[in-house]
Length: 99
Image (cartoon, rainbow, N blue to C red; front, top):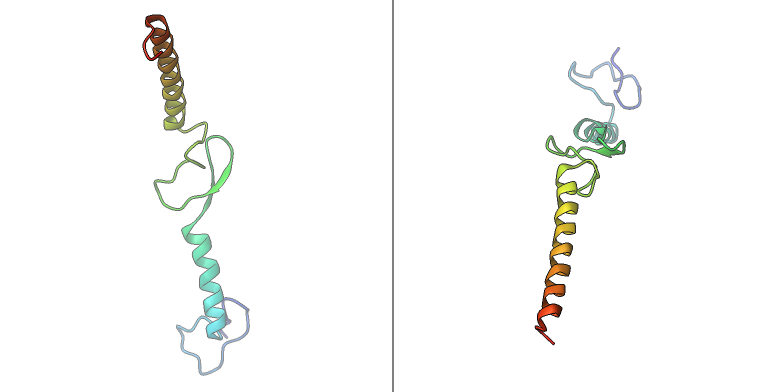
């Protein structure tokens, strides 16, 4: 005899072969749990943190992950911008511009 996939209760004698659940509540609960597991697997990022992958392109735990190539480029660009600002400020002071 077939059993409900959610609660394990036996399905009625007159149940169709394709019936999988004893009630709408069990069907709803099973699909809610199944969709959560099937569509959003937990994976480990290159930095070691666990995260839930939302789609196939989701490869890093966050936009600021230290292992993400764009994050290291962003930090380097920020450092270069700051150095350029300081150099311009020093040049402006030396030339007396903006005083």
